[in-house]
Image (cartoon, rainbow, N blue to C red; front, side, top):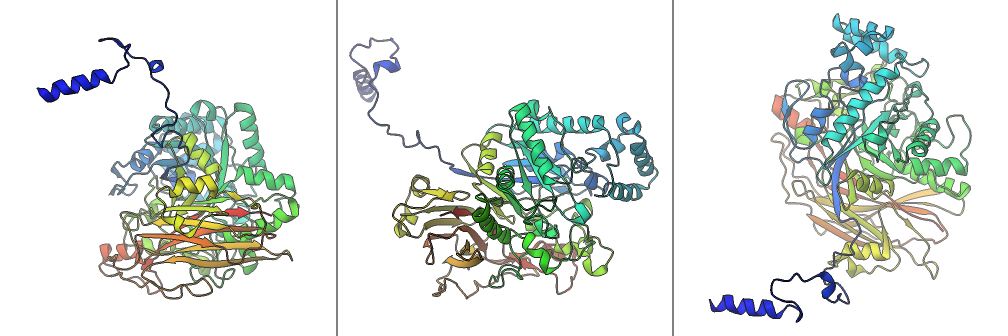
Length: 629
């Protein structure tokens, strides 16, 4: 009783003298504090990394639905949010951890053809070509119908089916599903689609993402490759949409490695040299590219980066996407991201704008409705590559010439998009993509932060307010570092990388630098800036000692007895020239772990050929930071 009475007395005495018992004390009756005690009131910088996939296909993509994918947008969202569902081949499947966001990016070209065939939709049956495909499928000749659709939809032919009504019905269904599963603060379902230009079999595909909800996105129909194979026409359509609706769009190119050198060539589709307007438009419309996915990693190539011992990771370099043209060395510069970043520096010096100033993410490009990229839970690229004892030898890219066939074992269980933002909303995540504060991984959920500035000190990497200080005095990944007052002092970098809490330790953290010299020639160099296990970094900035390997392939296991759970680095460019344009991005590499092929070999009791890789080193790629004189 005494304690209770004392509390009452103290509580009453704490009130202003003019407050009477039972009266409400208003905010105005308290003097405003000179400064706020809570440090979070004015914190607006991104404080969370959100994980998602910007590139998933369902049965509404004809090249998925016509070859066995029966899962639609509803199932795709439920799976991404953590529910157990049944796959296209009748196998139950569930993610270890749900995603934070998803873009269902079904192909715009004859959107929804497969489900319309399945339901004998009247809109399809009244279209003469659509009815032919319907009748072939219903007669058991589905593959013949699919081959005919592919041939008639090539770059030399008009659209197989011309039906805005069919497109409208499918687009409205996709929008409705996104609106249903979009839950502010919990799960973001972006509205989007894929523009699928493939001239001559060369991959120029872009995923188009809306910042907007269905009321705005539904005012247009997707612009498809049947409308134009030229990305400039796509960008014009995007501008028209924004002018008409007040909405916002961005496009994400992918698989430059299968473009035959066209993705990042230095001339337009009309064979004209770039001008400043083109460069500015491309940089604005395509702020992010997809660096890794099942059809290969497009970061770098050993022939372009011979000093990079990690450049051969998950390479697909036999042919273009059509499997009809062999890849040559001359095609490589226009096919890989690091070379494109270097080319962008040269174009910036010439034009005053950089068309290839883009950030980097990963995504799945799965045509199964399943965004499942864990190595021990990889559900393939298509329904035909869902788990089975035969999928490793399945032709992932068929080709007329046997030497150009890419087999199923070459598929990578990749990747994921990591976005730094404050809220899990369409607006917040879109804005982060647009400002390039994103990174991509091959499937692991490593947490990576990167800041560049002019006056960071070595001991600041250990600051408790590391991120707040990084934003206050520097720029994050995706940003541009402007020249410092006082001349030629080199930029300083603060980097932190933490392993996936459910994954493997880290091997090393690297800074990849590219620059343009006074002669107009581009260069690149790799620096190991943090390594695990006490290994040495030599005078050239490299660690030549491998981290080791604990993988037990037969039992598909590994141990975190090597590597480090956290690697941090302060780094200053030792060869900085304030007159030279440059970019810097970070690559984080894990210790070796079992690849999905090893899990398949054990589960199905099969022996794969010796050239099939059974281990890998997962990695993360940050968006670059650019320096311009």
